[in-house]
Length: 74
Image 1: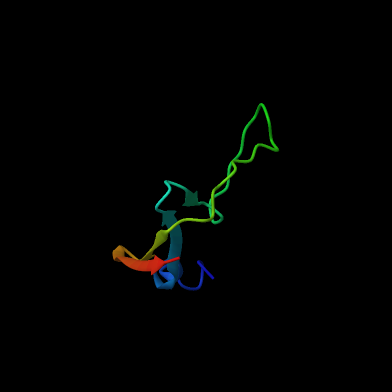
Image 2: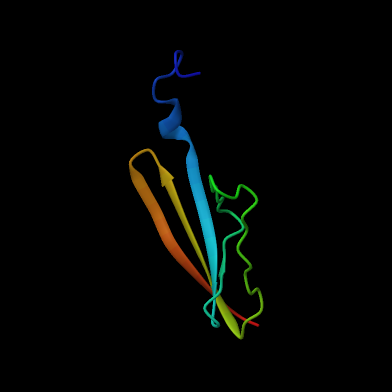
């Protein structure tokens, strides 16, 4: 695709999101962790909180879309 259209990657909307809880926990289910010393390393995350904020952002070409904040009560 890049050979046919050098601007192909500029036409893709790349997005990510994260959820932040009132107890300080962060939902990192879209993030990946690697460790050379322990490849099975995982971080426990508290998913319950009194409120949470979901943050969404996107990038298309050289333009940033957002961030957008969505407040949710538990």
